[in-house]
Length: 134
Image 1 (cartoon, rainbow, N blue to C red):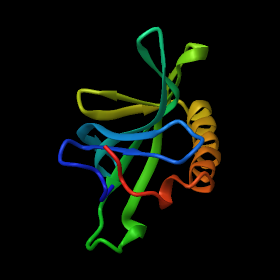
Image 2: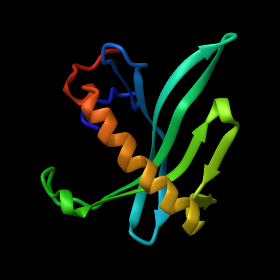
Image 3: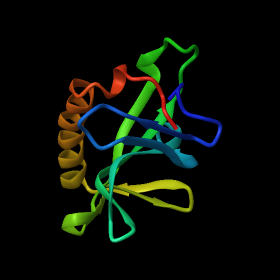
C-alpha cells in the first residue's frame, strides 16, 4: 500500500503475466472492527476495446495500527470477487450506506480460500519484487 500514488492507484509488472492493478475503490466504511477502506486487486485484459477482469477481488482493510510495524492490528477480509469472462460477480460482504451490513458465509469462505491461493501465486510470479510502474 506504500507504493500507491496519490490517486490511490498502483500497477505492477512481472514478465510473462498480465499487469496487476491495485486501487482504492472506497473509504470510510463502518465495520465492527473499525473504519475500512476497499482495495481492488485485479488482472485486466482488453477485449473489443473493453477491459475485463481476470480476476478482480475487492478487499476490506481495517487498519488499527499504532505504528507502521504493528501488523497484528490490520484486518483484511475479501469483500467481492469478479471474473468477467465467466459472468461472475459475488459480494460476500454487503455494504449499505457506507456500513458493512451483512455477509454471505459460503461466499466469504470461498473468496478467502481463492484469495489465499491467488496471493501466493502473485508472490511466486514476482509481482512483489518488482518496482512500481505507472
